Image (cartoon, rainbow, N blue to C red):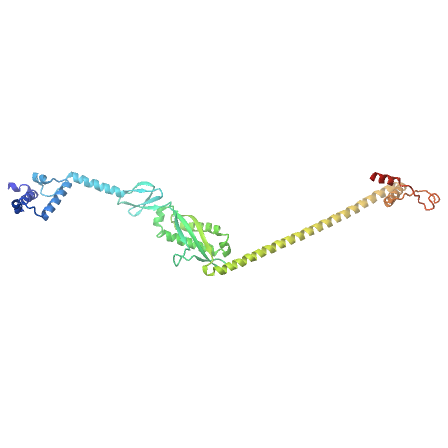
Length: 375
């Protein structure tokens, strides 16, 4: 009875000791070392497990067994600490500066986490991290799929091949996660729809030449409006208008048409310039003739008015002094008629004194003096 007082575990240890001493009866006799039994290997593993969990070794079992495998207070504390560490590892998470986190309380939106260390007690609160500042690119018209051909119809019923990129990022992570099933496909579909609407309201030539910047600005506004109506939490940063060309099948004929249109435009500009030049010259000549006629009219009118005024003034003087006025008029008239002649007419000279002609020749002393001064 004293040999079995330690219980089955204690007695098992003693039996094991006894077995090790007697199990290989030939070991004590011949000194050979046999292969270890499977039971011994299992027992050694159980012993090491008990030691790790805080239980005693063989001495503990021999000192006083409890009737079964026990867990010590130290083992329980270690287990609890391990569980707390695992829970904290699952609850704390880090958000980088270019990211934002969305925390879910029992699967519903709870709050948005900021960059840094965040706490979401697991399993009550879960989280998803979203890139917000990273620029994402959606390409339209690249022809990578059968539906993404980029061929669009203009207002003047021409077909143009459009290729562009929409660059966007995330402004509201919660809306981005919950309101859109496929964000990239949504952005692509909204961008293509807005571009088709703009192209349908435009003509071909401006699209190919001068209106690309205006079309890109209109497209950005239209796509942003559509995404805002979906409450997508997406902001369109810019639109890159890469290509606007005719379809490859007709590009050669289109180039010929464009060359002919350019030649027509050049000839029209030259004709307009010639017409403007000739018209300007004709208008200048007409204005000159009109001014000359106006000047002649003014001159004639002024001369007539002056002569009439002079006649009126002379007539007034004549009324006041007829004899004096008559003599003055005679002298002025003779001065005006004979002023340019080289003859000197002497009044009151008889015919015998003037040689019978009434004209007395004289020596032109003044002419001689002028000639000498000139020499």
